Length: 127
Image 1: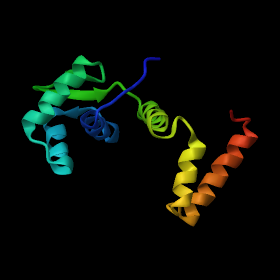
Image 2: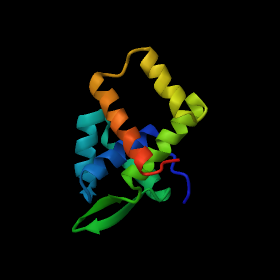
Image 3: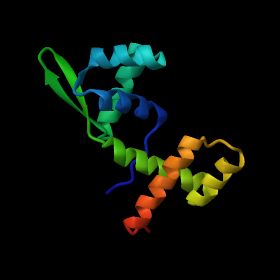
């Protein structure tokens, strides 16, 4: 599958559509105005660009248009995480976790969650 690489603007639109879809142009305009302060023209321009890139699909919905995401949220999140790890930590999850742990940025609950995730990965024969 082709590598998913989204801009911050594309994340905003897709987050809106992942929350609920299909959505009309006016629903998207209203949501993005409320959540990120975009004007109508910014939202419409972004929607057209994303449609051209194949990230969303537009269909007639009565007298208006409705949009649906063509990108899966989990696939996008995994690709973004991999890109971040590669850019910042040379692909090393260990380096990232070490940096966070050294700065005491992990709560006890987060540490417990990580232990649980690692235990499950170990049982499942992770990489």
